[in-house]
Length: 80
Image (cartoon, rainbow, N blue to C red; front, side, top):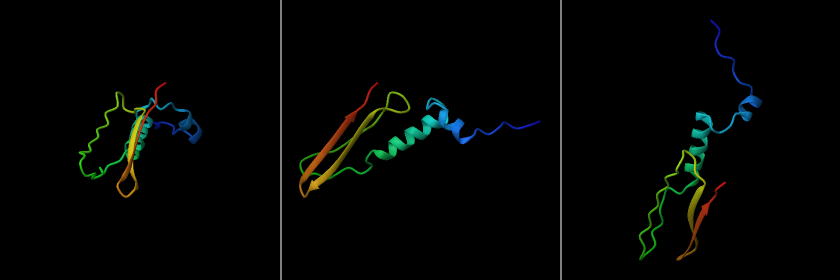
């Protein structure tokens, strides 16, 4: 009995992200873009939680210390 034919690179690229492997990979990439360490800012408690409605969402957040004591917070939302 013959095994399944492997997809070529071009065929894989045409596969929509709705397939399980592509969606999982996209969710993993997105999770790695989000911060995993929270800043310590005197006088503030910082917390974040990301729960997409589907396996991959269109939201993004990040923070960075622009200079000592000055923080920038970035929030993004994509839909459509």
